[in-house]
Image (cartoon, rainbow, N blue to C red; front, side):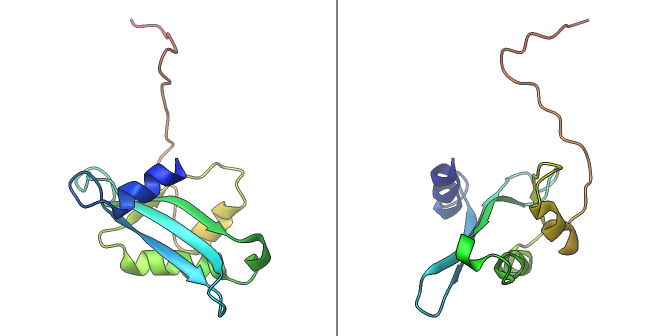
Length: 117
């Protein structure tokens, strides 16, 4: 899924669109990265969806996540949304950066059956 998100972000619209933010150390080693894709739903949803954010284990606690998230917020025109599990420790990072919970996402998985009244 990560590869698909990167491919989408780096492909031209209308099939793709988005951007990556990468943090590197002085020796050019990777410290962190973010993948943001365009949703194509500006009327109904924020223009950008933050799909992946990660920091290298040796870079954690150094503010790398905060810095690359701030860069996303600066570069993303018309807003950013993301999905995060309630118990994910990264939720605090997002909340401190100004993200707030607008709604509860619900999904109906294919083949779930369910009743129709």
